[in-house]
Image (tube, rainbow, N blue to C red):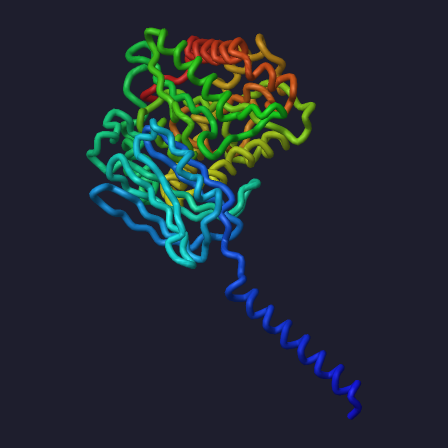
Amino acid sequence: MTDSHHNSGRRRLLRGAAAAWLLSLSRTGMAAPPLVVAVRIWPAASYTRITLESRAPLQYRQFILANPDRLVVDIQDARLNSVLAGAGQLVSEADPYIRRMRAGQFDQRTARVVIELKQPVQARFLALPPVAGFKNRLIMDLYPLAGSRSALQDDPLLALLEDYNKGDLARSLPPESQAPRAGKAGRDRPIIIMLDPGHGGEDSGAIGKFRTREKDVVLKIARHLRALIEREPNMKVYMTRNEDVFIPLKVRVAKARRQRADLFVSIHADAFTNRAARGASVFALSTKGATSAAARFLAQTQNAADEVGGVSRSGDRYLDHALFDLVQTATVKDSLKFGGAVLHHLGKIAHLHKRSVDQAGFAVLKAPDIPSILVETAFISNVEEERRLRTTRYQQQVAQSILAGIKSYFASGGVISGR
């Protein structure tokens, strides 16, 4: 063999050895660990949600320490970065559960997050795959322990969330024989109305060109409407949420049933792929398919809210029961009548996208015994309507129109409870 042949063979051997060495490093020591790209904290009276968003699913272990109370989360195969290191700056002094939060590199392969607590909590963990622009997420929900000072005795939300997490939401609901309440609403007792501001917390809903968030606008409208209803002597009002907090759709429905509401009003300001789409709309439930392509699209986007905010593996038993009850058409019929009254009054202050009540399979409208509607106050994707939605004047006008619709509906004999 000549020297040139010998040298070329040696070079090929060296190149192959170097490639094998680099490959082995890329699979072991040089492998990029799952990278945390965002941390979000949503404090509320009922619970605080912490979300760690990452490029790959996070492997973790967690445990509670006492004296002082701390929740420790060890993230495996992860290195501390600026996002994790800066998480403590996101903690609000008003957070009822978190005192402070810090992160550090526990060992070469573990990043440790320590959450110092103001009181003992029960922590619920949920890993979610990428959806709707979000990457992988590790969600940590911190609830107060039963009997603690933040356990909101007068609000059923905590009990509903707890049963939802356990997969036994039906346990929190009144028996069918006790719902709705006895007596005619508005005559023998107050009309009970449940307002449902859509989205909340990590689920921002639709976002307009000028960064207006649906969850913020609809909460303001709901608060205006609540204030108006509270002035009515024959009405009583509740809200599914009065904070920037994520509430699962099934829990919203269950809260309305728990309070034995006479009416359920879900308030939204959604978007469409075409920015020219405009106008207010009212929707009721359909058990036979959507009455239009737009209604079907809207129901799909609204029902997907649970996928963004985190779906528990529970509550199916309640939902199956509700769907069975909805074979009865009386509630849907009442919903259509109620929706028509609200739509009529909305038409006095806004352009209507459609002049009749549309129908689709909205999960949040599936209370079997409560006439329920979903009000699209405007298209936040339309620049002109986004500007209107940001004004207190329009928010108040929408609230007044919905109340006028409620009054018209009852004046025409709607919802005779105890039927």
